[in-house]
Amino acid sequence: MDAKRAEAERIVRTLRGAGYEAYFAGGCVRDMVMGREPSDYDIATSARPEDVARLFLRAYEVGAKFGVVVVHGDTADFEVATFRAEAEYSDGRHPDRVKFSTAREDVLRRDFTINGMFFDPVSGEVLDWVGGREDIRLRRIRTIGEPERRFAEDHLRILRAVRFACRFGFSVEPETYRAMAASARALERVSAERVREELVRILTGPNAGRALRLMHDCGILAVILPEVEEMCGVEQPAEFHPEGDVFEHTCRMFDLAREPSPELAMGILLHDVGKPCTQTFRERIRFDDHDREGALRTKEICRRLRFSNEETAHITSLVANHMRILSAKEMRLSTLKRLLALPRFEEHLELHRLDCLASHGKLDVYEFLRDRMQTLRREEIAPAPLVTGHDLIALGYRPGPLFGRILSAVREEQLDGRLDSREAALKWIRERWPPDERG
Image (cartoon, rainbow, N blue to C red; front, side):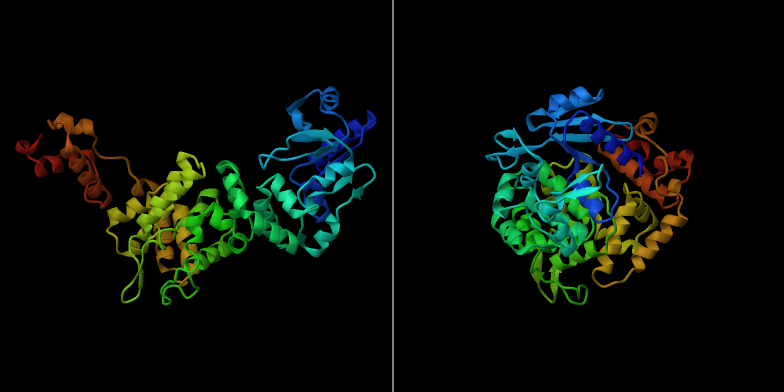
């Protein structure tokens, strides 16, 4: 038994010793039934929040209104929640009122059957009043009780159903699926931050390609990401994209991805988001400047979903540069070095690899760039500048537009290997921009 579980059991035994009911609850029980190692342990109890706080020295009420206390342990923090039954959810997230109740009533207000089991670590018994073990055996996601009511209580459960189905490779029970489709529009009322958090968990988890298809099929995608929904049915030239339309191409990239970072996952999702509005039909289907248009759309989407400025910058860069990589083999050395110097370039390269594998399958540019990353030292790719603005002022140049042109030209010569010292750079500047042109 690992230390975290042992500590969770001690909390249960302490509550039991004080005369209260207490069980492991929720996801940890699901994982145990499935033979998985739980990442954390939540505890449900008949003890009121004030009783829990009294029993444990390091206990803090974080949601006393909802009966939740966090017990700080040596190995982790443990949420200890009082059995409760809930009434109406007028805001689609929080219950209007809470009443403390029995273990069985507590289970009946939870979201999905696979998350609605309790486990008694003292007796080793699984308490299952909702058929969670059977649904695990049948590999299906099913709500507890009426699906429409569960989704009305917390609209984000619609996305959580997608995540659990794809995380475990389960199907969605038909009534639950129909309720997801019927309730999809309710996601408009969920905060952008909560949608972003759930979306990122879906896209960085297993079977993200299937998740996208499922969200499209039941109308979720059109609500939370209409720009991605627009990619469905957008044809591509078969000689470059035998896999099908823009949406299917994106799904296949996720089929091939392995645990991408949140930013890379969003880059995969949005790299072709500019194609629907740039599609033209001439001698063949074209998407001129779709990378530029896609970057503009990506920035808007990231801001809408409340990504941080740093995250938005990287995601937008992935989208903006994904076509630039294609010409890497023909680039002059300075241009190639600027490309390789992009922050977190390894993710640009991984996006390119997935883009190729999900379409024509050719990896020659990927292999070229991977080799150049190995042969060029970091100080060669992004060396310290040879001269600065202070050097130009010392030469007699006054700050102005010429400053930027000179510094850029010197940098280009440096990256191409034609200038390798400060002295050579200063001499080159004096020869190229004589005194009468300073100003």
